[in-house]
Amino acid sequence: MSELSAAKRIVIKVGSALLVGPDGAAHGEWLADFAADVARLRVRGQQVLVVSSGAVALGRRRLGLGKRLSLPEKQAAAAAGQSALMRAWEVALEPHGLACAQILLTRDDTEVRRRWLNARATLDTLLGLGVIPVINENDTVVTEEIRVGDNDRLSARVAQLVGAEALILLSDVEGLYTADPRNDQTATLIPRIQHLTPAFDAMAGGANASAGVGTGGMATKLAAARIAAAAGCATVITLGTRPSPLLAVEQGAKATVIEPSTTPAAAYKAWIAGSLSPAGVLTVDAGAAAAVRRGKSLLAAGVTDVDGHFDKGDAVVIRDEAGVEIARGLIRYVDDHARKICGLKSAAIEPALGYTSGPMVHADDLALAAHAQTA
Ligand code: GLU
Image (spheres, rainbow, N blue to C red):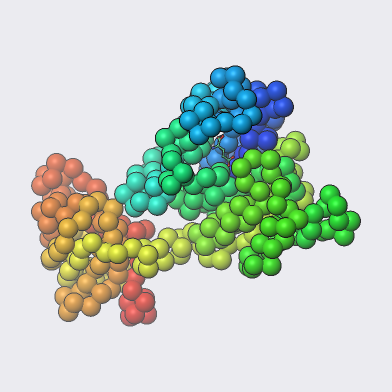
């Protein structure tokens, strides 16, 4: 299947049912096999992020807690289990020369722009260093209001955050069925979904509701797929219990693929253009306006005026000297610093500020106004 083999960045969600054995201990054998599967992708040059559940399940055993937990007990179990979870990942990945890094996120980290940029920068750096980020929700500190709640959705948010092309939801089900295959002989697996219409949700909500022993059933998997599709990322729901599940799915094992509705780059630009309220305005000279229209970064040298109060990472409007909006983008400097370097050549930024963050707005973080695209 090309979604997996062609993706540069892949997020793989591993559920508790795969990671934690019936005795409540980490499933070392499964992890060892899966690590070899991941190493194969790394050798091909693909970047892999793992979203791993299992903290609560492992912590429960470590702390001698029963099945039903109060919220504080659950958070204590997550704290105790998270380190056991990371140890299990380290033991599995090390023989392949792969380092992993723990990332614990809350919903705000994927929604509040400044934290989002920060999380993205850290993940980019880790991936650039060849490390496998192992991500979980920061269960120990989250309250109901700020929880993502399940790792299916968290993994989709992570895919969106890093601009992944593929999200693999490894589960204890083979994919989405038209009906519950356990009691309906006519149930068939849906191999590919182009548009996730409510008809599919109806299938997930009914017959497949109990699929997945972890927090999320099939409905949350489809909710995750919907987030991923809008972010330009394909979702693959497949069985994680078979040996080398990633290789298996590449070789045609049963799965449900939900196709993306855009590309990650286009989704990111649409987000900049549409969903952010700009905090400032940059006015640029004719040369810079032409460069921006051609898809280049906006350099400080071409900025003639800076207006508004903003922080690094905030959205700003870029206008030409006639006051016409030509683009929106995420600025790399806080307002005071942007004012200081306005009109300066790139080499003069560091002497002026004591540091440089490069262009005022990087080309990757710029979305052209609709009329400017055809100009
Ligand atoms: N964050 C939870 C844990 O690590 C799991 C949530 C889920 O599986 O959806 O135990």
